[in-house]
Image (cartoon, rainbow, N blue to C red; front, top):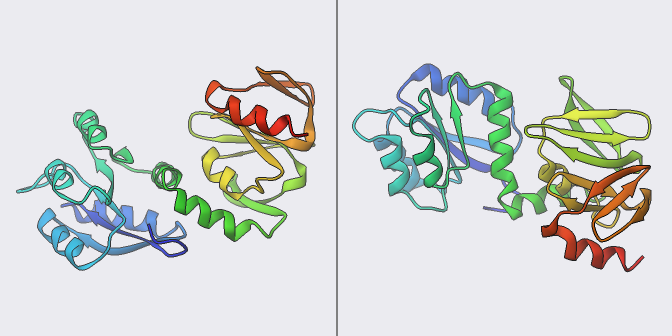
Length: 238
């Protein structure tokens, strides 16, 4: 992916209304630029030859060339988010290493979640987001249909659930549908530590720790096996 530049995408669907819905959703997401909206795979092939495309929103059930066949034939560097009315192809879609598999009708929140997944698996986008916020002492997250400012100093720890996260502050808890990896990329690494796929902690709020867990303001959080080595190495320096 090109660092500090827009993510170039195309929409491929034989239904005009479906293309319009996706285009409307995508237009609300920063850093994503729609290069073309294609009604079939033939048109999409032409666009891919002419442009360096990063991401394709791809319907599966299309005439002549199906979305599955199209996905199998393109460069693997081009990532796919399947958009379909059928659950039947989900397994095959993920076998093609699709970023996500969206069932119609597609809500904005669900599409944004898929795009966040795309960002999560690309370290360059993490780096880009971090460099844009590294000189700030705050970040903005979307909560209750508005952008909420959160001072880094006020964060105690961050907790991830299936499709949303809780940012625990001293006096309140902010709930947002951003992914924990997206939030991690915005935080200053010297002040925060990922200890589990579901937890990021503020180092200054640690009250005690063992090889298995860290206590933050009387809340015990588990250190996962995959993070343990790096977490303990960092904590032992304090």
